[in-house]
Image 1 (cartoon, helix red, strand yellow):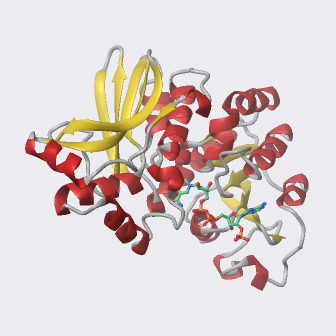
Image 2 (cartoon, helix red, strand yellow):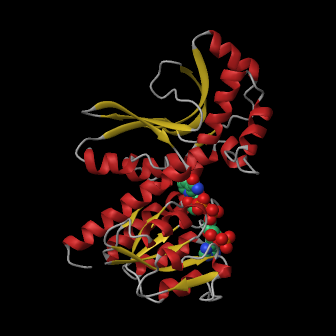
Image 3 (cartoon, protein in one colour):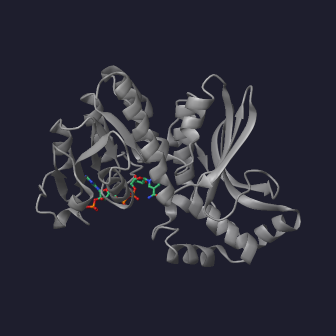
Length: 327
Ligand SMILES: NC(=O)c1ccc[n+]([C@@H]2O[C@H](COP(=O)([O-])OP(=O)(O)OC[C@H]3O[C@@H](n4cnc5c(N)ncnc54)[C@H](OP(=O)(O)O)[C@@H]3O)[C@@H](O)[C@H]2O)c1
């Protein structure tokens, strides 16, 4: 059995913990969980009935940082699900480094460490023979990274063009279809829980840029940083601009592009019949491969569907470690 610890017991962490503890993921047991309050652990594995709503309510809670749990060496796999921090990647970056240094495999949805330190972390993983999988960092449950790495590994990815942020896509869709102003569409998105209370990173295109950096580095072997991306958000898009676009069979979408000219994020006119022209909270990514040509993939880019990316990465670790008789 692969012994797993989850660091970050929020929206994703709780859903994943329930799946593993209920036995829905074959070959894996959950032996530890950490939040910002401390951690709990059980070496023979948590059952569903053992899982607390919040760690504070557990009698097993140890008031110590997640690093102490990682250092206990009771697990083969760390699933890192703490909040994304785009300044220095912490606390996730330290958690991932610590695990990889010990040869512990890592699966994460945390964009910060992967966007800021991809090369360093991959080198560290190679050095200790650990796996580092991060499908859930981009596009929720849409298998963007495994699509390239597993199905199209021999082809060369020449460019990426896509809608990578569901919040801004929801806002632009409401402006297009309902004639709403950006402010009103944003308020509605916040009421529905689609937009954060502070939506700056989404509206200013930074979230899209982070995801573009992750895709460019991991799928196109680029060595880009967030500061290499030319970023323009949607804050200046008016209802009038959307109406004018609509009259010519187009709309405005926040598009991220990675190609031979570099990385950029900006609102662009998109034809309504372009395959990447999806609406609401959907994401769409169009890959251009040297041999295959263009391939567009569409799906929910966040929320519950992200758990699918996490369990598929965990399954990949289980399969690999079983093959090498490590578990
Ligand atoms: N939710 C999505 O749809 C989605 C999709 C793709 C990627 N992601 C990324 O996945 C990660 C997790 O997302 P989420 O929505 O599950 O976040 P969340 O609901 O905000 O949960 C974050 C968890 O991290 C814990 N935490 C914070 N600081 C910590 C520390 N120093 N040590 C240990 N734990 C700490 C929090 O503890 P407390 O409970 O004590 O506050 C909380 O349990 C984020 O990086 C996010 O950007 C999320």
